[in-house]
Amino acid sequence: MSELLELPWSEARDQVSPREYVEASLRAIEAGNGALNAFLHVHGEAVPGVLPIAVKDNIVTTDMPSTCGSRILRDFRSPFDATVVTRLRARGATIVGKTNMDEFAMGSSNEHSAFGPARNPWDTERVTGGSSGGSAAAVAARMVPAALGSETGGSVRQPAALCGVVGLKPTYGRVSRYGLVAFASGLDQIGIVTKTVRDCAEVLGVIAGHDPLDSTSSREPAGDYTAGLDSGVKGLRFGVVREALEQLEGEVRANFDAAVEVLRRGGAVIDEVSVPAIGYAIAIYYIVANAEASANLSRFDGIRYGHRSERARTLADVYSESRGEGFGPEVKRRIMLGTFALSSGYYDAYYGRAQRVRARLRHEMTEALRGVDALITPTTPEPAFRIGEKTSDPLSMYLSDIFTAPANLVGIPAIAVPSGFSTTGLPLSLQFMGRHFGEQSLFRAAGFYEGETGYWKRRPPFVAG
Amino acid sequence: MKIDRDEARRVAGLANLEFDDAGLDTMAAEMTKILTYIDQLSTVDVEGFEEREASVTPMRDDETRPSLDRELVARNAPAWRDGLFVVPKVIGGE
Image 1 (cartoon, chains in turn yellow, red):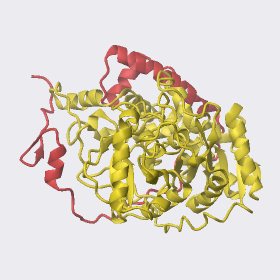
Image 2: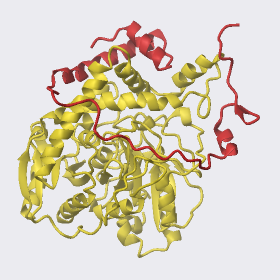
Image 3: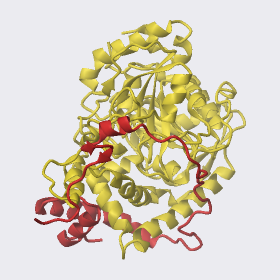
């Protein structure tokens, strides 16, 4: 295994030629992907690059397929590159491959990929989390120093937590979504997976900023995200969310308390804050996200691209049979729920109601953030679960996102950083949630915590190569 | 909220998704369980909170700009002829 890939990008890039860096990454992918299934496509050519990076398979690229983990897009080849891909290439990065994911980013375990689940490098019988499971596994197993994923309810932070790496969901609108295949347009945001907080801040600096091709991308100038990394947390205030704390038990609670103590010792002030509506986040999320998904996924109709059923004899059959054959069970379940919530007679009781509770949650979170620099919770309620453990109970799977979904519903940035290990040796994770466009404060806080603890340095049992 | 087979069939029709009867029954049972969880939202006090956000999605200017290359679009089409997407008859029946 390459020593280079053991290092953070910010250190390795000064020690190696762009050709060697990409070749080392491609070798690691070749050696490890059979066991981990983290990549759906690997670039056949070692194009020299200052950063070998993987992108999730719902971020389109012209030089590799973009399947979104779905049979319906098995052969799809985008006619254009996503803006994030263009920006990375302009700065000398090489896209080495496309990572595995739950179909259309719908899932929390990567088990809903049409191409089989990615596996967790800490225990290959366990899930990576999802939906950006391939991206998290690829970084954890030292196949690439960085990867892009996408978030709608925690799909970068939750797998980052379960694989023991750093995961960022930027503010809604911070990063262009041009070329990100839409799931729920009011929530979707491209995120970043890296080994260290500094690497994450640097990658955000490359991909953040306004894009005329995405009207929801913000005109707020991108910050200097590495500026506060060494400033410590003295004088910062963090809010522990009381209602989240009440749901914790056992070693996840003990791990969180220890993380809070690290911040306190660093000179931070810890307040307890109340966000009573936080417990409704999953219920809100599964109405709002699925309603938007049901509309967005209507584009997959077997006409312009994607799978067309061979059985279909009429136009109406082309739609329903192509979709029936092309979509997996979780995608169908979500389209059905979303269609129901928007249908005549149920709209007010479900979609309208969920949006009003979301407005209340937004108000409470904004109020809580007024008095503190960031809110803190564990990233997930438990470490990585076993493959197959939750597939027969969709609701229990959904609850994996209980601490991550609030940031998506409110549009604020949040970062997950490794916070230690369970007694069974599985990674645990701490989450900071900040104010809109407050990524710099998150990097400062997470960077301090990482510097004090250094959990990212521990290698998983399965390292590629 | 209880979803039965007929309601699942109605929603599947709206969503253009095809299921057999067993598939409809499974879907109805799963939707019932998930919607029962979601029904907790009906008890939340939302007085003063509105469905629509104050912020509106910004729109780009309506200007002409280059569109996608036809050759690249055709490459992904399931059926394509003379620069057009080919579809079966719109009206069913023989």
